[in-house]
Length: 321
Length: 97
Image (cartoon, rainbow over all chains, first blue to last red; front, side, top):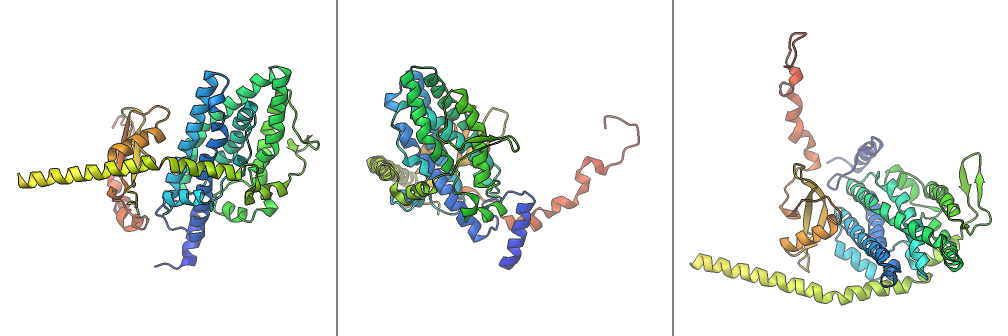
């Protein structure tokens, strides 16, 4: 048996050589724990993320919009399941992870604790929130843990349509009546800052980042990803004739970056600690869905028992026959 | 581990995108029996084409090498250069051999 320190050196050498780590490979316990934390939070975010948009399925303005929104929300459920599946390769049980979420012990992305007040919110979520998720997930597709990387590649392929359907909704509103334009601007104003917070605290206040970067779980820092998102999104906002709710926003010729004003991190921490506008409502909705699905789980088990009994009695008949 | 108190076993899912292509592992689902695993696999891993075939296999039915086997288990393949065409010498200028 090699000692821990030597195994860690070999592990880091594999990471440095850009090798992927697979489920049965040796890995530091902390690497495993960090991945379980990140991946399960990611899975929960996909599941809770169905709620704000699901709110608008019955009120979508046309059948085309309704089909697209249904497909998108169904995708989010699927993405949650890819991620629970990938997390289980680390030796945890998905039912335990789901219990952690329902009992309020697990985190999920802060962004889903904000309400969807108008139809414009559905457009802006697809464009901003899925857009930000794609920036993050494109980076995670290159993560060092094989199953996480493979799940991210599948998710990235599917999410491109989410962003485009959102932007299409916004384009339609931007070309609409003054009231529709006001509605769009209001949604942009409310979602801009919470979306920028999705990338997590600034690099100098992100305690997990150095370790995650060294292990190539993450390949870019929070601030780098946030800057990239701002750079690609600002021109898209301007193209719609809309504005960004940041008086300090300016283009920096030297770096080619759009520089933003200060982010209200107090709000970020307030929402994480459970005091966002919808934290309680989201968990209640998940619990209600779980409780109302109890009869399905019972029926599945009853069916499984019946099949077992039938198999047993058939076997008995054969041996007696 | 794979057997749950609720009977929802873990199944590995393999998907074939087109005939002629190999089935490829894509992830796992939880189900009490094979038909249910297949339905879940379709809903989770085949929402968009192309998929022509899905296999589901109980996770515990897979018997696999361990990462530690890399040395002793696979080594013999490394020292048989005579399994490769370049081991054999052919006169210069001879083609299609």
